[in-house]
Image 1 (cartoon, helix red, strand yellow):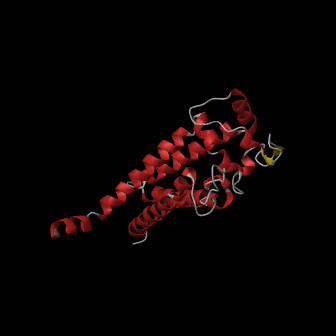
Image 2 (spheres, rainbow, N blue to C red):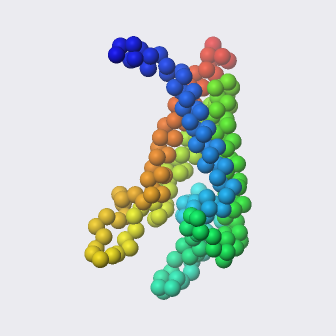
Image 3 (cartoon, rainbow, N blue to C red):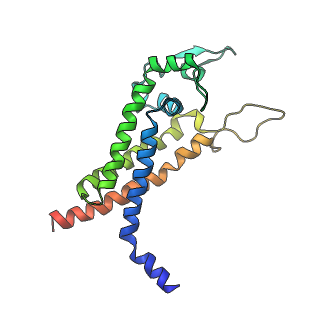
Length: 203
C-alpha cells in the first residue's frame, strides 16, 4: 500500500500532463462538433440567453407569440431535436447566424485546447491556454443563471410536478455544471506553467 501511495504522490507532474491531454480531448471533440448543425442548434438556448454572447445572433431577443398565445423567444419555436432535421428550422437558424457563430466558436475552442496541450512543451502557450480555459468555463457556468432550459421545466402531467426549476438541473444543466471541473483544471495547468515560466525565464 505504501508503494502505491508513493507512486501516486510522485506522479503529480505526469498527472498534470494527463490533465492537459484530457482538456485537449474535450476541447477538440466538442469544438469539432460545432461544425455540425445538430450541435449548433443545441447551444442556441445557451447563447441566446447569455448577456456575453447573445449579440452574435441576429434574432436572439426577438419575441413572438406561440400557438398557446404566450409571448416567447423566437428560437423556442425553431428547435431541432437531435437526430431530426426540419427544413424551416434550418433556414431560420441560417438567417439567425446560428451556424456561422458555431463555426467560429468551435474554432476558438479547438485552439484553446491546442494551447493547453502545447503547454507540455511550451509553458507560455500553456499558461495562456489554461487562463482561457478558466475564462471559457466561467462563461459556460454563467448559463446556470441566464438560461431557463438548464432547469427542469414544469410540464404538468397526471399530478403536480414537485421537482422543477432551481435546483433541479436538466440534462443540459448537468452538463453545464461539470464545467466547474474544467475551470479548476484550467487554473491548475496555468499555475503549473507559471511555475515553469518563472523557473526558466526569471530564475
